[in-house]
Each structure stands twice: as C-alpha cells, then as structure tokens.
Image 1 (cartoon, rainbow, N blue to C red):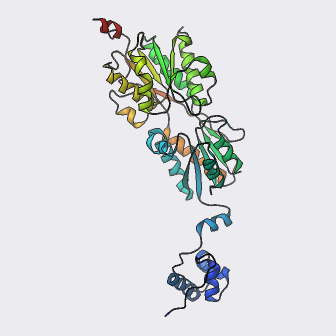
Image 2 (cartoon, one colour):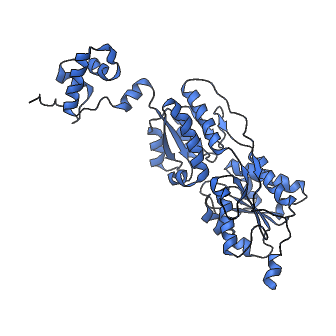
Image 3 (cartoon, rainbow, N blue to C red):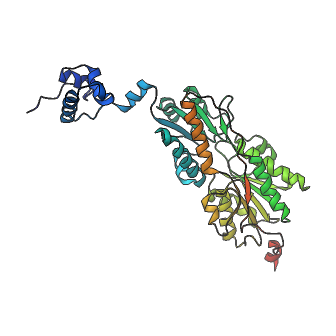
Length: 372
C-alpha cells in the first residue's frame, strides 16, 4: 500500500503539503507543474505519480494567476441584467466579436449585471479580472464607479463617457437623422419616435422635452438629437413628433407602449424606433391592430440585427457593425493589458438599409377607413 495522504489544515492538499509528503521543497513541486525543464525526468515523474495517487490536480490556477498579476479573464458589465446579454441579438453579436478577439490572448469573459445593489457592487469589487468592458450604461451608475475603483484597464462601449478611458462609439446622431429624413422624404409628417429607457429604471409612456433633456443614456440623447435635426430641416417642429419611452429594449415593451398610440386619433404614419427590438414590437402591435405595413404605417429600426432581416415585412433599419465593434473593443482591451497606450477610435459610420417596412405616404388614412 502507498503512503497515507498528508494532513492538511484546511482539509485539502496544496503544493506545500505534497512537498512535505515527498520530502522535497515547495519550489520543486511547483517546478514539476510549471517549469518541468528544471527537474530530472525521474523526479518529476515521482512527484506527479504521488500527486495522482492522492488526487491532487495541481496548483490553484487562480492563485498562480494572481502571483503573475494576471488571471486570464475580462469582466463585462452589462445593463438590464445578465439574461439581456443572451436574449438581445445585438448584444450577442457584440459579445461574439469581443470573445473572438480576446481568445487570441487566451482571455475569457466574466459577465456582471449592472445593478446598483450592495451584493452586485461587492461582486464587482471582488471579481478577479485583468480588465473591464462597460457595455452601454447610463451616466453616474454606481456599478461603473465600482469598476473604476478596481484600478484595472477599462474600455467603454457607447456610454458613459469617462475621462481618460477609451470609448468605442458610432455616429448615433447621424443614424437618427438618416432614419427620420427617410420617413420625411416618403411624405410622412405624423411621426412617432420610440426610445429605450431614457434613465436607469426607465418608465413607459410619452416623454416630454424635459424628460428627453434629463436622459442619462447618452445614446438615446444622440439619436433623438439626430431625429430632431432631420425634422427641423424639413420644417417639422419637434413638438409635433410624439416621443414614447419604453420600459426595456424588448419587442413586448414596445408593442405595449405603442398600442394605444397606433389606435388613437391622429395616429402616426411613420415610426422611428431607436432599436430593431423596439421596431419589431411596433410591427407586432400594427399586426394586432390590423394596420398594414408599409401601406398604412412605415417603420424604421436601428442596428440591422439578424431578426430585422427576416421580420414580416423585412425591416428598414440603420446598420451598425455589431460584431466588428466587439472586435474593436477586444483589441483595445488586449493592448491595455499588455501595458500599451491607447485612445478612443473614430466613431464607426452607420448607414440606412432600405427594406420593405417603409413606403410612401398614400395608403388610405386609417381614420377614414374606420368611418367607412
């Protein structure tokens, strides 16, 4: 029979207890795993054989990483809870691009929900990561402050702006402007704009000018500013445009928020939704109300996500490089971990993709149809 297992004060084997069992130094056992060239083949084989006999799988990778100053993981702070990272098509594509880039250096991802409660903030402060990616959180969010307190490299996607921190963004204002200009060019003057939450927590319903001005999600601020610029260019007062805030960036939330608007008097003939997810909800609400798209209602989204291309009808939308932006963020993270200096890249351009969800004004007026 082999020797009995060595005693360990905490009930588990370590490099030190294995070294004592074998009568060698801790450094010798460590070299058997990490620097085998420093040992004779016979000695290394003896150490590994005894370790296998005792069920010892090797040094704790977390402890080894901390001694090197690296743990091989990048924290990603996401908004709207962890489930959003797996259910939102745009976030999925971004994370795919990010992961593809980080794996070039053997780095993994550790997702954290951007909540402000004490438990989540403690988990952020305790997370063993080499760097952080902040994925589109509002200004002043406590989770962002917790990330910054760690002193690790940080890269931001879209928002918030943090002095000295590289930010990867797109031309949101140009996208909003292109979407509304397209609707106006088709002859639509009764317009509605659907936004994602304007502030943390969000709310559902019409957003007046004050609510828009107090928005802490700067992406929404920029897209609304672009939309307003297009309206002004066409001589349409922004006061004439109905802005509706949704509780979440989800089709269900958009369908719920817009249902009454589509059925009411003076209903819009053109809708710009600030994301494809919201636009898909508008299409669903229109279908439920018997409103034909695009004959009676034109809808424009933002993102050019995969569901936009297979929607019924296929969605006109503002395209952005979703997977490409993930790779850009990943490249910046890799450079920062290597100790290189980086700066924010130029904003990625956007473009309007025309599909079947928009058409010229000229369909029979819905209020007239209702009276017939």
